[in-house]
Each structure stands twice: as structure tokens, then as C-alpha cells.
Image (tube, rainbow, N blue to C red):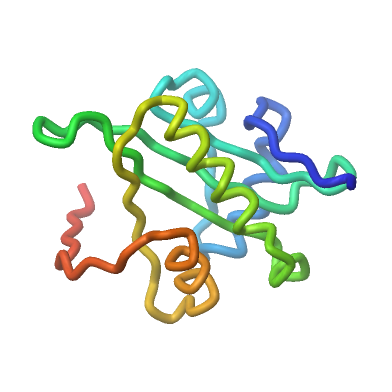
Length: 138
């Protein structure tokens, strides 16, 4: 078992940026120091034989009614590693982190075209809500 899940480290920057190329066409420039130092950001790395093959992040924000809430962001596993339950593994680890931090609720968004990802989230207990998610780019 050479798979390991750990927290992101400074030297992961380049490898994680190239991993994000699987998720977005945009060139990503990670603020790795901020990711590491922020108490509200829990970025996990999935490794196979020291090679980064996946990542997922739990962001924490405070809501007046719900208190601390987790948001899952940027879940990605390299294409040739998909279908092996690794997304599930890293998501379960994020859920564990949230429970340790006493977070009562986790939300995430997932594109309707990403059918395997959505099946995974549902199998972990996430429920699809018709919230009409809005976004503004500033």
C-alpha cells in the first residue's frame, strides 16, 4: 500500500498546479503559503509512491445561523487513477477533518456532467439541494 493522504506542503506547488490542469483550462497559480498557513483551509494530497495523484480541500467559513460550515473545493484525481475509489478515500478523510473540527455541515457543488463524481458524493451521504447557486466574479 503505497497510497498515502497528507496535508499539502510548500514543495507540492508545481505538481498540484499541473494536477489542476485536469479540472480547469485556466493556468492555476497556487498561493501555497496561504493554503498552508490558513486555519480555514485544509488541503489534502493523495500520493502514490511519492507522486501526487489527487487533491481535495475543505474550506471553512462562518455563518451566523449555522456556525462553522465546511465547503469542499477542487476535488481531483488524475484521470488514469480514477475508478479505484481514491476520490472516496480523500473525501472520507476530509469528512473526518470536518468532524474533528466540530463542523456540522459540509456543502459542495458539482457539475451535472460529472456523473461519477456526483454518484460518489451521494454515496457518501451528500444530498442534492435545489438552491439556485449564484456567483459573481469580482
